[in-house]
Amino acid sequence: MENQFLDKVEGNLGVRKWSEEAQRQKGDSLLEGEKPEFGDSTNIRGYKKNVSKIAEAWKRIYKMESFDEKPRVMPEYRRWRSMRINDDIPLPNSENNVPLEEQLQVDPSEMEIAKHDFKKKYLIMENRLSGLENEKNQLKFGMQSQEREIERLRKGKGKAEEDLNNLRNDYKKLRTFAKYADLGKTSTEWKHEIQEEKEKVDRWEMRFNDIQGQQITMEEELFRNRAENLSLRSRVGELESSLQRYRSRNHTAELKASRQENENMKRQVEDLEAALEICRGQINSFEEIQSWNNQQWQTRLDQSQDRVRDRDSVMAEALVQVREVAEHLQTLAVQADVLSLQTESESDRGKKLAWLFRKIRILGVKAKQYM
Image (cartoon, rainbow, N blue to C red; front, side):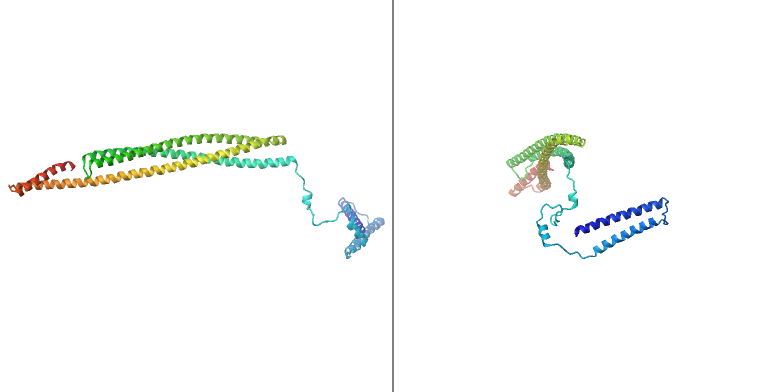
């Protein structure tokens, strides 16, 4: 029954193709100016016969499609169908349905696979080269900032030397002043304090020399970093040239030969990354040491300046007090001269007053040098 249905469908398709071909030929003949001869009875009968065949064919198909399809097979046929093996028409399996796109998919060739791999590796190399260029720019900016910092340290060094000279001059002035002025301390105490200040100044000079030596070592490290930067630039240039060579190669033999070079490039890139990490660590340690030295130097300089200010204020107050005492002694000396002229007697009280007036005059003479 299924075979009959398929035969009818094939016949229907043949009739449809024949009718379309006949209509097309009629249309072409009308366009070319040919007029059909309706007076010919044979042509009219043939045309009616063909139309009746087409109508009968459509009626048969229409009637077949309106039937209810029910399985009309025998049990023996069912057993045979379930047991058949290696049939030309396989049974449909809904579980293992493969889409048509996957069935029609073409397996890539070795050339296409190699080309795809080369594109991937080319993109990876471009990304790494861009990263290396960024690292190179960052190193360049870091070197410029280090040069500015070294210039600032040199200026600070000159300023520190100037401050040290000023401190030495102030120290000499204090020593000369302490030598001629007695401000409530003995000479041994003054010597001990001066010795302590001298030791502090010596320690400060030693620390300053240490900072200067550290600055020299930092400059040497900066020089080495510059040399490493130049080597990195040369390596980046080599990578760029090798990348240009990779761009100019397109055929299969050169791709196979370039795989070994790609491995070498990978190792070179890894070496470059390791060198960059080492440079980063050195730069970070250099910045930490430099910041720590700057902080230590600044704190020591501030402490020494505070000590000098405190000592200057103490010395200024002491000088003011000495001048006030000297002025008071001068007034007392004048008053003692007046009173000595008024009280000239031979009594014990008069003698004591005269002795007191002489002492006041002597102190007044000593106080003149502090005014």
